[in-house]
Image (cartoon, rainbow, N blue to C red; front, top):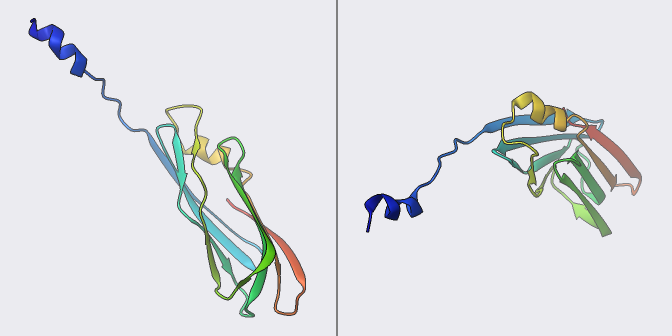
Amino acid sequence: MDATNSDRDTDFVYLPNFFAGCSLNGVSTNWSGEIKVTAINRNVTTDNLKLEYRVKELPISLKSIEVNLSEELGLNKTIKYHNQYQYSDTVYLMTLDGGEMDAWVLPVWKLRSKLSNAYVTIIWDDTKGIEHTETIKLK
């Protein structure tokens, strides 16, 4: 057996990881939000979306949360609470599934451009039962 032929099965090509990451945050009248988005090679992941209710009157009743970071990257999610979710904390964490980029090499400005229309819309009732809707533009 020729040593050069038997070694061919174990040969591989090393590809370095291409990395880009950015943080998005925003504020509305009653809420603030922040999230970190990371792209490694073609895979896009996020940390938990952190929503913070900035008003002291608790509990609130969450009705729905719509997150749209990027349709193109598949970073979106909607949660609807059919039996309003009583929430007594000021911080709400939400997980998102990852997405995939259309290219391997990704400069940070390109990742940011794909996230340029990111927003979160929250619908909730306050302690008096009054419904509110706010949208946080994430930049």
